[in-house]
Image (cartoon, rainbow, N blue to C red; front, side, top):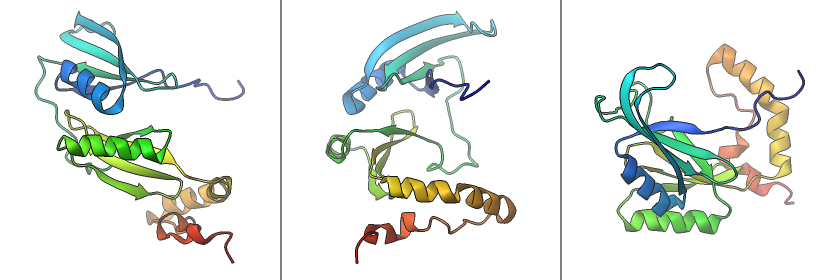
Length: 185
């Protein structure tokens, strides 16, 4: 078997507190169209009695973001051992202007937004949806040279990390800003 087994992500599913609120929120702030709702009283894969509403949103480019509302289950939480900044869904936008306009819409409605944050390869903003999921909007700013440099050190970095569990410095340029001076005399 040659090449990748996976063709694309079919959908990513999360739990939500309120399916209708989630559909409306993602439509308002991220312009995602509501494309499908499925509701059952039993889980098709296990047969377990557990009523749910499963909603699907168009995340662009053939990508689908889905949510389950589970009204009979205890209130959703998060892993107390994982920092809030770690688990997140990063979504790509087409321009810095779109990202900043979304930031302004969110902040106008009292939603706290962190950023833009410069990651060298992309600029990002971060915020939480009504169910507490951390979202990132990212606009790509990387160059072929940056990607080449990262590709050249990826195995050295992962191998060093596997031994030391300390951040390798092979790509320090990404966050120290030195990449901004490449190509200048």
